[in-house]
Image 1 (cartoon, rainbow, N blue to C red):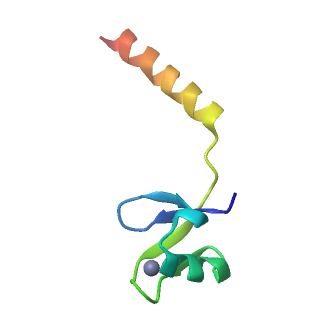
Image 2 (tube, rainbow, N blue to C red):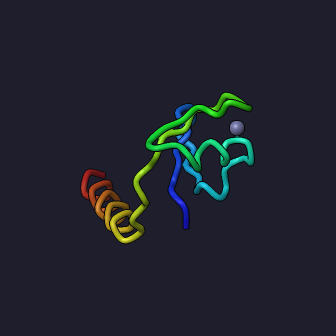
Length: 69
Ligand SMILES: [Zn+2]
């Protein structure tokens, strides 16, 4: 699995492999952020998602909502 990249506009998160071909070329040599020279898209490195933590957060907020209602 490659790194995750988050679009500066829109917050879309994609793996390096899923980036458009033009962006992928620039991503390969980028450190923490880059702007694609071909299409002009701006991307910044994103931390990997942790499914377990996300599931816990969803459950916690669900409980909060029920308690408040
Ligand atoms: Zn591009």
